[in-house]
Length: 404
Image 1 (cartoon, rainbow, N blue to C red):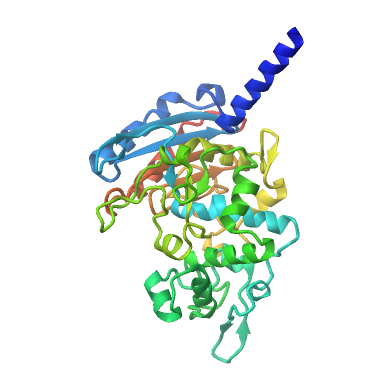
Image 2 (cartoon, rainbow, N blue to C red; image 1 turned 30 degrees about the vertical axis):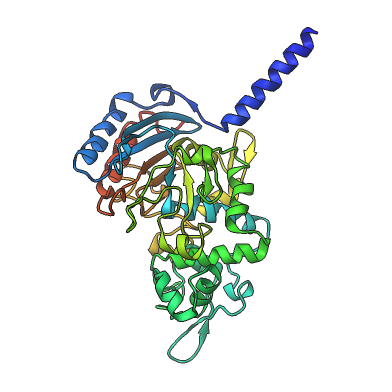
């Protein structure tokens, strides 16, 4: 009888952990070779940004190896139509950080499984996808690697209204049709324009290869595999009430309501319905900390693997042929000064999002910095560019033991 009681207790305990989702253990900075006194300087940076109305609030999380050493909420997650206090588990619209945690991590799985090659032409997967044509009429085909490194020659963006004007509708099918035939602005691998259209194209490649929507593939093969509880696409559309009650609103719309649980980006919202390669993921600091810990550990955390170590290394390495542009496969390696600050190693990579989030990962020091803010609430007037870099320098400066 005693054994049955103990077994039942263990089972219930395990189910409780599963219900909570995977979370990193917390540790003191000193236990992980960092200075808590120096990390406390983050407070001044964020509080000043709130005072200057650059943001209504924020959540900052610092990861060292596989531990959270700093996690703090500041200000409010909403100030319109009423004030709501920010909490550490607030869920944010990740905007373009979705390119990394959703599209890139999913796509790298296709590459490591041999389903797609980096040098494959896009028209192998999207048959009517047009090449770049030079002045002599020679066709130069756009490849997967060109999309991932933002060196494809595709324009930066297109408004849904233009897609509707040219294609008759502003939906996902019309959007990829527009991208497939739009004017290429430079020869592939010979220029750099950061483009949402690159990642919407990658989304369509993945969907054609797997037969699954990107949102479903990423949920099943990345987010759920890591045991993330609060990371998903389009929580409002999916009626995920446990997530919706934690979501920070973004911009006030013409009807007087703020977007809540709907992606802020127009292409992802209007054309993609929330399923898009360029934006659409919602998450919180603790879930993103698990992703960062997995990447710092070669693609695995707590026995849950999403990528192999060599895949992670390839993903964070700038390909030789586009080295001057500073883009790795789906991430940005040229993050110093405007995102990561002045002190992290040259291996540091990361990404930002239009709504205010940023992720910085330094594999050399095994450190990650996550800043989540809804700078577009209630109006698209705020910004955190300098503050991100300042916080990056503070975190790097707090490291007393560079290797663990």
